[in-house]
Length: 138
Image 1 (cartoon, rainbow, N blue to C red):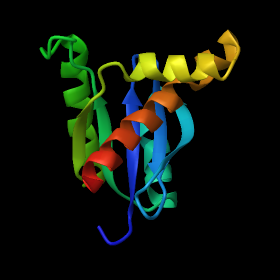
Image 2 (image 1 turned 90 degrees about the vertical axis):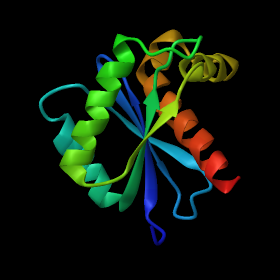
Image 3 (image 1 turned 120 degrees about the horizontal axis):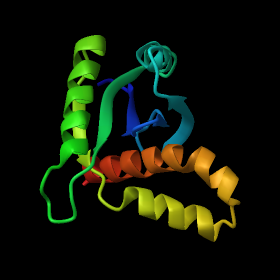
């Protein structure tokens, strides 16, 4: 991937949290939260271009017992849309407990409820991406 960055996505019902790795693939930073709409793919395309993304890691919502529910199926369909639209590898990453961990982190930071609501998806995307980057480093 020659120094290209990795994008982490937290795909939700109403929003998509977006994080991008640094150039050395060590850390993830939150970029934005995209409102789910007809323009979501165009917004992602702009971010992929501007950050020189070469791979996408997408949070995969498994049930606690490891089974797949309806939300996982929607995520698989979204992953396929990403592959077709951008021609990039898309890795599904087990995101169990990611949103809970993001919420805990924000609570510990004493972030107000209103502000937490605005940044929770971006924070979840950072945690998804960070977990993937750590696994890649082994």
